[in-house]
Amino acid sequence: MERKIGAKLRMEKPMEPQGAKRGAGEMKDGATGGPPKRARPAPSLPTDASLYAGPFPFYRRPSELGCFSLDSERRYHGDSRALRYFAPPPAHGSAPDFDLREGYPERYRPRDEETREGLDHLLRWLLEHRGQLEGGPGWLAGAVVTWRGHLTKLLTTPYELREGWQLAASRLQGTLYLSEVETPAARAQRLARPPLLRELMYMGYKFEQYMCADTPGGSPDPSGEVNTNVAFCSVLRSRLGTHPLLFSGEVDCTDPKAPSTQPPACYVELKTSKEMHSPGQWRSFYRHKLLKWWAQSFLPGVPRVVAGFRDPEGSIRSLRTFPTMEMFELIRSYREGWNPSVCMNFCAAFLSFAQSTVTQDDPRLVHLFSWEPGGPVTVSIHHDAPYAFLPTWYVDAVTQDFPSPAKTPCPGN
Ligand code: GDP
Ligand code: MG
Image 1: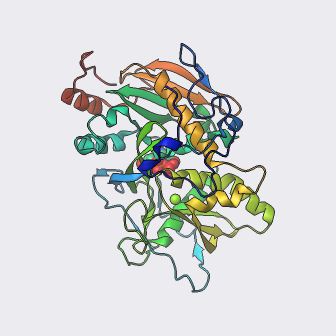
Image 2: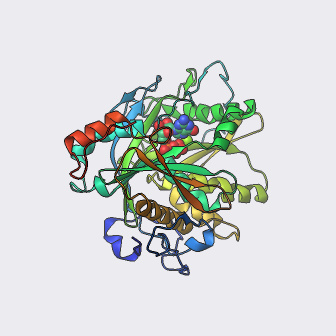
């Protein structure tokens, strides 16, 4: 299962962050990913950063296969109707003064977080487009299908000290599907979310409203409501090492003035953060927040993150653009920083681990990968509810078209 990732596969337009030296790291046991070589699959996968400090692995330049939109009632549309247009204030005008608390709570329509969507929207897109996928007829069978957000969590795992995760995995017609399961701790935290945190979440979306227009060249309209059901999602193809990837991620906006109008190069990710006043605050920001921003935008090839820095009253006082490929430069000189190679090597190792662990093709069988900070990734096996996540409508549709020769199609959950 384990293969050397990198060097030889460079023809296919790889991406690597500036300053991430190929071949500069020391190769340690397990550094290129994959479980230890034994007769049986390893029961667990270590996550220590020191084990993954090899050279930056191959990562194919992500290409957009398509997109879909979710409307204000969370209904799926196979088009870009929810895409918004980057409309920042004039660069040389006065400093911005966006009041992010304006409209809260009366104009806030938060998405219902109790609804477990799993991969459903992405599966709907895939069902409607799998006949036209590039990469040849067998491509999807060898791929991993998931949300970008799940991959982001894998990338940051070697550096994460607080929040664990659980990923459910099922194989269907060769394809490995990964869908996150909310951990009991995350659920408890969400249900007990302090009002201040709830308002902070609103403020992040409100910033998007101040920075985006509904039409190219239009002006933002902050008078409407903030409805977090609405989403524009890009569906992307990439490959990490030997692992073909098909994933989708929510995109904040596209820049009609971007040098390249081709997605994902025209996409912009918007973020807010507290204003910083001391070198120590900047250092902590680079070490913790910038890692998450980098992982989230690097995966889909979104080239820049535009950050708004807010004062204690919740007003944006300054804007700064962080080019994704330059983020690592900002942390490189610090001893206790993060390293993109570690993130990507760990992710590749996890994918190898998952591919070799989930050997049975059965949509009702779930291998649940669980991780808590300080420990390794462990696996447990489950059948049907509550962990099975591939919906019947999807399983039935794909097994009717291409019944697998070895077994009769089985009903999903
Ligand atoms: P992100 O990278 O964490 O923002 O997540 P993705 O871009 O991969 O989003 C995948 C899907 O999950 C999209 O339909 C999003 O609207 C949805 N989503 C993103 N964040 C959250 C969240 O915090 N809670 C819930 N319930 N859904 C989310
Ligand atoms: Mg954002």
